[in-house]
Length: 151
Image (cartoon, rainbow, N blue to C red; front, top):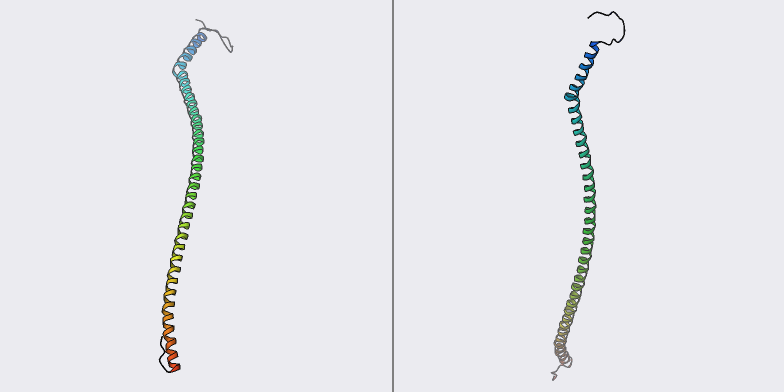
């Protein structure tokens, strides 16, 4: 081999061919060792993130569906509660009316019994008073006349 004294930026000789082959071997090795595993990890990460995003969207849709079902059930329960409240109020009103009617009937009965008792006492007292007034009248007349009066 002989030395060529040539000052050039690029010289094409065996060294360049060896460097080109070394570079291609280096690219092949680095591709196998570093780039393919990195690409696999990046693909796995992207797939995982896509799956998480899909799961999140599905969970949000399910939450919205459950919320709508819950609102529907709530409105049904409220309607049932209002109907039950109305029925209870109606029943209570009827019972109150029945109790009031029974109370009025009982009051009327008690009033009639009290009036009859008062009338009976008044009649009894009138009889007693009449006997007493007759005895008193006889006594007054005897005292005024100063003699005995026949009844």
